[in-house]
Length: 91
Ligand SMILES: C[S@@+](CC[C@H](N)C(=O)[O-])C[C@H]1O[C@@H](n2cnc3c(N)ncnc32)[C@H](O)[C@@H]1O
Image (cartoon, rainbow, N blue to C red):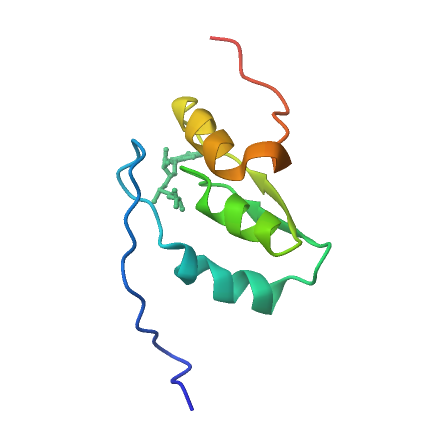
């Protein structure tokens, strides 16, 4: 039986220009455990879009924010066709 209070997860590489990207495996378990298929995940610190990529890859929707607009382009690359850009804040 795997421990429930800690996980062993390999850090996975990410070549994009983000300094603190989560390994997708870290996000997969909570996405599947906490949100039904067709449900929506909210990630207010979206960064390079790991949560959005994992969520959409597992049949969930995702609303993702990030204070740094350049991260939108990283997230778009990772989520691809599933990402709808709501609005860019005027500079
Ligand atoms: C640890 S990183 C998230 C990494 C993300 N989980 C991934 O895998 O790419 C935290 C992110 O929060 C963003 N951030 C920091 N303060 C914020 C704020 N007040 N509102 C929205 N985003 C913020 C940063 O720009 C950074 O991209």
